[in-house]
Image (cartoon, rainbow, N blue to C red):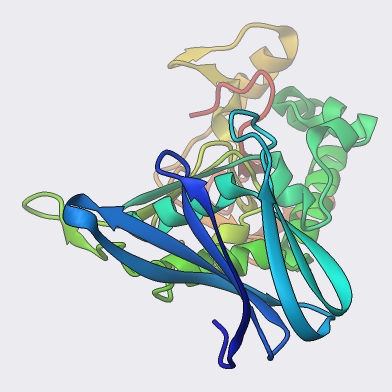
Length: 301
């Protein structure tokens, strides 16, 4: 909002797209307001955002809206004084922001692009070795090579800092930026339901670093920072997988009670489990461990 006298004002929009009020003042800022018109000619202004402009002694402001039937519709904002500056505003983003501000519940669905913005490679950019070793059969055939590659990826995911978009979502959901989110409400006789959920296909585990998401994230492909016993990779819906390699693997199976429930969290030294021949093994059954992620041809429960 402007804290100084206004030097320019312009109202644009329509009932269908929403009315938008732009203002400019001596403080060299352009502010955007939403104008709400309701039944009975009741109306009100809601401050949305403002940006600084490099124009001193502002004396006029004008806005041209492109055809709003075009999906690339924009508000072109021109500010003049000692110089001029042109701004572009997408009304669709403003409507999305309004929907977010009014939301009581929020489901955030993310994919590979969320990891890419942190500098992590997506599947299309992975080395050929990754594609080869993203297969539980390779754990049985080349255990040390398999675990070495996945250890390196797990450490990379652990050490890379999540990009600023995670902080934005954290402010929305965990720090009260979206004030209409209901918080925790009774969803049944025995449990509370979060007002926000993350549905992610990424395996980097970055949402788990934020307290506001740790208990309400669904990582459908798992999390590479967690490793567990791989004893059951030779099983498919309770039956042995076929093939000479799987015959040998299943012959040596010795699943113990603690195998399925024990999770090993990756660190630089792979501490937390026994090791043999340079790779980690389950402390219960002494079979190799695997990252807790969904791989190609994966039937492990």
